[in-house]
Image (cartoon, rainbow, N blue to C red; front, side):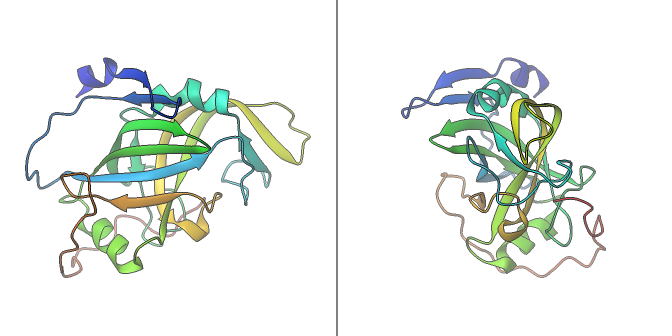
Length: 206
């Protein structure tokens, strides 16, 4: 997969936005690979709340910064916390393989490691349709004016993303859904909650 990630393609979408993706061979019925789709964040739109690491400031991710950083999302992990309210970079439960900017939305697709983390799939089902959102993880962020009440991010590198309750995310306009192998809505399957303890505790960030 490393080689495929390095040879990932950059194209344009029908809406004129930038698209970046890495090739992952299709394996029918793969038990550890459940497709997902989500809205990671909004571009050129102020966040409703301050994200972790922003020192209490709301932020605006500039479109030019998001477009330049799209390739850095390829192969990055998605993580979660047992309370679904923040980030835990050590609980990597999936991978991002596709990213695109469509209007004001930065959309992502990828795979959840469902066999390794059955509690994630179950938790998403338990919270119900439309409850889940996403939050990005950044490094090397360049802020136009640190004194501004709303920070403008002119340059970033994406290092990962988190699945969390949409109401806990800095942007309420984010989303996260699991898909079927055909790319359509996934059929929910009745499952019992795993008896193993959670891999993490309450989050330290949003």
